[in-house]
Image (cartoon, rainbow, N blue to C red; front, side):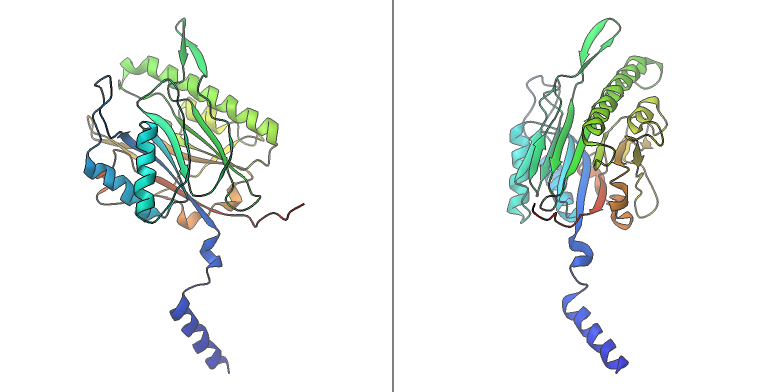
Length: 305
């Protein structure tokens, strides 16, 4: 009898695969700096169109990752974002919901596309700080949306792209100060979220922070260990164990500057086996960054009240 049951189970697996419940409840989020994604030259002349092969590589990678939502750094205009959505829809994966942050940097913006509804928007476009006697806006602002992965469930996504390191070494002192100021403002924004929603808020903070994990700015964003609003660094790796996410060609250096940080309440939902840095032999065709991926076990739908 036992042998007969084993054969039946094997036949079911071969015919239908594992039950869909084992993976259907995973929500896949991808964070990615797509390196100057624009289909037309910038008015300033500083940015050239992204090559067609590179555009196709971005779309192909998102499809391969089976993403449910994608957070972008260095996205261009609303038209550029809409074109990404159009190409993905034509390939059979629709992302009908989107957010584009129109902050000080009009050429390299934060953006997000999603297959599930955006039920709240709280992105920041006008935040500023004082540096050497001058008032300076956070160039890319902060992206803040709440998604509904399953009916009644809520997932808050907060994205940032902190000040770039255009000058390496002593010449980058002001850039480091600017990043520290932007990081402090991002932490203040997160503190406000936890103050309003409580310590059990399910928050995923993502983005290109342009700094090392032990830098003062990244430590500010993580928050004091054990505090109600502290975040956990998932520190994903690729299948070979490499954690780098960016290649800086002038010095031929590889570094981890793209992050996925989760709140205490969200951490138990992380599916470690599916959380990674995406490794692709042709990764450079799409961007100078590699995408970071997190899979989250979605909660059961909340009963109607």
